[in-house]
Image (cartoon, rainbow, N blue to C red; front, side):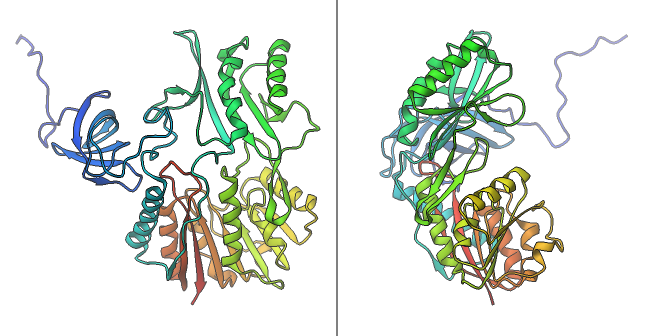
Amino acid sequence: MAKPVRGLRFQPSGGSRAAQIPVGKKQRLTIERLANDGRGIAFLEGRTWFVVGALAGEEVEARVLGAHGKVVEARTERVFSASDLRRPAPCAHAGRCGGCSVQHLPHDEQLALKQRMLAEQLSRVAGVEPEEWAPPLSGPEFGYRRRARVAVRWDAKAKKLEVGFRAAGSQDIVAIDECPVLVQPLQPIMSRLPAMLQRLSKPQALGHVELFSGSAIAVLLRHMAPLSAADLEILQAFCAFHEAQLWLHGEGEPQPVDPDQALGYRLEPWNLQLAYRPGDFVQVNAGVNEAMVAQALEWLAPQADERVLDLFCGLGNFALPLAQNVREVVAVEGVATMVARAAENAASNNLHNTRFFQADLSQPLSDAEWAREGFSAVLLDPPRDGAFEVVRKLASLGAKRLVYVSCNPATLARDTVELVKQGYRLKRAGILDMFPQTAHVEAMALFEAS
């Protein structure tokens, strides 16, 4: 019997496969340009590197976060030759925390990057440019975030509770003692939160913590086991010290410890108060949100005798201001609890010309009862997946004007193709700087029927 040959490796028929680059490896790179998401792009030995924290023209040392085929994801560890655009990162946790990926760019350059991202998507995917570019809607670049989810995880091996934000490119948790983008009322809560949580008796049963600042301050704790009386006392004392509501999320929906407390946010220009519960979708940037609603109303130009459709209505963020200007608003949302909350918000603000419906908006618009009379104008604010099935039928509703609020330029561009096919023109577009210090782009587009 022949002796087996050991140590041979059989290669695929296409030839040898290049060795994968290990996570953690450091590599010196020259950055050629910026990607649409703000990462630096470098090319080395047939691979394309995407480097967080690098700028065009820089020479950097990058640490590998992951590699897939010929694409390597990395973060900047050291800058040997800096771009003239680079500024010192305002946050002490820059480069480790995954939350703010472009804070090394001045704010005006961040806006320019986001403008290029939107223009490139509309041009490349849809082959169009708006007849008019609107100036960016922006506000303060720091102290804007009124909602944050704080990661909490028990490290059984180290017997340590980790509290903070997710690291860039991994599931690691970076301890945060101060976050420059949080609104000021949440800063002291954020800094004292880890020490308080470490006093609880079952740290391994803790999930995330959600912070919110609106008409009141709220702290929600997700927990996977019942809390002891002593733990509840610690939580209540912490919230009382910070004049915050305490919400708990065990089984079922989040609930306030004190059911008589109200939580929500105001749309001050319209004298509106919207109820909110932790877990609901809400725009995190209050100032830009108000500017966005005002611009949407200006662009849509609703008239007193018109019937307007609001798709993906959420809590009524657009529907309620619209209702103050038109004969009727029909608002549609996919999540039943949000539909109920929006209807309650309309009633509590004495708006009785609104109707709210639940529908699966990932599917084509059917001959629903609420759609039969048609609409003069439509406003839609879909999630990142966009609204492809919805926009395919919009022309059949008779709308002459359409405002599309997008949190993903790629799906906005894709849906623009369909709207152009239906005879709509892209009249105006611009970015909404909802998340300064990040490469996340929100946009608004106005379409009019030809």
